[in-house]
Structures are given as C-alpha cells and as structure tokens.
Length: 91
Image 1 (tube, rainbow, N blue to C red):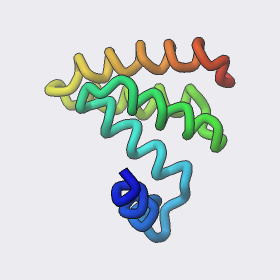
Image 2 (cartoon, helix red, strand yellow):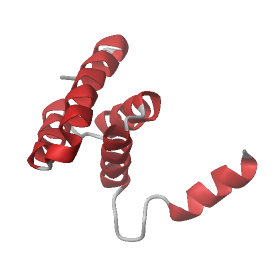
Image 3 (cartoon, rainbow, N blue to C red):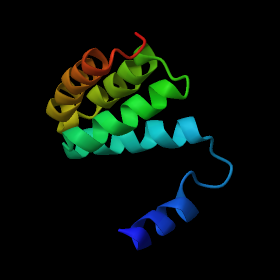
C-alpha cells in the first residue's frame, strides 16, 4: 500500500492541474466505471475543496450525451446525493 501512496503522490494532481480539478476528474472516472465508494470519496474531497454539488451534478449530466454511460451517470447522481446526505456536505 505504501508504494501505491508514493506513486499517487507523484502523479496526482497532474502538473498544472489544481487539486480540486484532479478530484473532479477522479470522481467522474469512478462514476462512469461504476465504482461507488471511490466515487463518493473523491466527490466529497472535491466538495471540501470548494467544488459545489451543483457543479459535480452538471459534470455528471454532461455524460448523458454519451448514451453508453447514461446508466452509470444516473447511478452516480444517486451516489452523490447519498454521499452528501450521509456526510452533511454543503449543497
């Protein structure tokens, strides 16, 4: 696990990308892959870094244009609601 953490610290966030943007990208990637727990972790991190829930919802909705991930986007919107409710994150 230590090796993973070291690798991650060197790669994230990518050069020239803010930490908040990196968390947005990670949460969106986990959403479309259908990974609930990592999605919630990174979505909440993004919210803690100043990204609004509405911004995350809008970015998830942008994926609806790609019909191959429509079900994953809908699921991730439900996960975002659950994560924010469970952690009393700002709306």
